[in-house]
Image 1 (cartoon, helix red, strand yellow):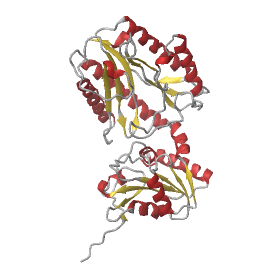
Image 2 (cartoon, one colour):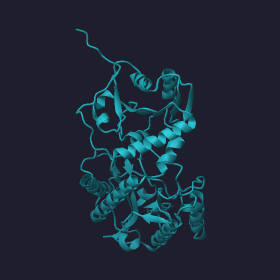
Image 3 (cartoon, helix red, strand yellow):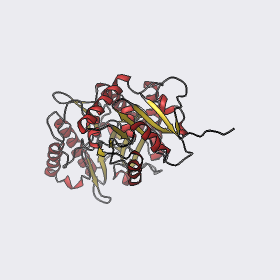
Image 4 (tube, one colour):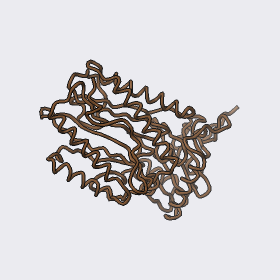
Amino acid sequence: MTLIRPEMYRYHNGGRKDALPFADEEYHQRIAGLRDIMEMHGLDAVVLTSMHNVAYYSGFLYCSFGRPYACVVTHADCVTISAGIDAGQPWRRSISDNITYTDWKRDNYWRAVASVTGTGKVIGCEADHLTMERAEKLNSFLQPKRGVDISAATMEQRMRKSPAEIVMITHGANVADVGGYAIRDAIREGATELEVSIAGRDAMEREIARRFPDAEYRDTWVWFQSGLNTDGAHNPVTNRKLKRGDILSLNCFPMISGYYTALERTLFVGECDPASLKVWEANVAAHEYGISLLKPGASCSEVTQKINEFFAERDMLQYRTFGYGHSFGVLSHYYGREAGLELREDIDTVLEPGMVISMEPMLTIADGQPGAGGYREHDILVITEDGNTNITGYPYGPGFNIVG
C-alpha cells in the first residue's frame, strides 16, 4: 500500500468554529474594505503575510516559529494558509476557509497560496513584511502580471477603528489598570523587578480570562523597571532589588486576541527628591497638555511641535528621546505597527473620530545628573467628534505614585 502524501489539504477538525474576537459581520466588513482597496488598485488577489493583517482580516493570530503563514483574499474567497503543525486550530479560529500545507516537499506553502490566487494575476502584498527570499518565491510560484504593495493601504484601514474595536481596546485599557494596581500593591523595598512584574502580569491574565472566557490567552506582559533601568521605554525586566528613593517605571501590556493596550506610569519607592519631583511634575504637565491637544483636525506633527515648544520653554526638550504617542489595534512588541498614526515631527496624519492614540511623553535624565532616570506617563485616548475620551483610569503623578 502506497501512502499518499499531499502537498496541501483541508483539515477542519472539530467540525465547528470557535468563538472569534469579533462578530462575523465585523470581519465581513473588514474584508469588504480590503476588496475596495483591491478594486482601487486593480488587484485580482491579495496575499497577506503579517501577523497583524492575517489576524485583522481573518481572526486567526498565527504562531510562526519560522514557518510562513498567509491570508489570501480574492474577489470571491478568503482563505488562511497554515502549517500542518497547527492542525485544525487555524480553521477553528478564523472567519474563513483554511488550507494546511505539508512539510513533505519544499515550498508547499507557495503551492497552497497559488492554489487560491492562480498564476499570472495582479497581486497585492505587504512589501514591508516579505523578506527578499520570500519575495523571490512569490514571483516564482505566482508569476504575477504585476505586484502592488498594499501595506500602507491596509494600515490606513486599520487606523480607523470600528465601534467593536473601540469596545475591545477599552476592555484592554481596563485590564491594564488592574495590572497597575496589582503592581502598586507589590512594590516594597527589597522586592525585585521580576517579582513585581509577575504580580502585574498574573492579575491581567486572570482579568482577561474573566472578561473573555472563550478567548485564547497569550503574550500579555509587564516591563517593570527601576533606577538606571528606567532610562529606556522598552528595557527588559531584571532581578534588581528595589531601594528606597528609586525611580520606577510601571508598564502593563495586556494582549487580548492580538489587540495591544498599555498603561505606563512613573513611581518612586518611599520618597522623591526635589530634583526628581521637578522633572516628574514637568512631564505630568506635558502629558496633560498633550491630552488637551488630541482632537479632530489636529495633525500628528502639529501636536508634536506644540509639546516640543512646551518642553523647550522649560529647558527640557533635550531630554526627550522618541515620539509622544501612537495608534492602537492589532499590534504587539514583536509584530504590527500603525506608523501612520504616531505623534512625531515627520507624521502629518490628521486625527479623525474613531482613531485611538496614546499620549506618552518621556524625559530621560542621564545617570549621575540631578533627577536621573526615565519619566513617562501613558494614557489611551479615543478621538471623538469634539475632542477625546480618556479610557485609562489608573492615576498618574506624585500624589498617588510615591509608594511605600
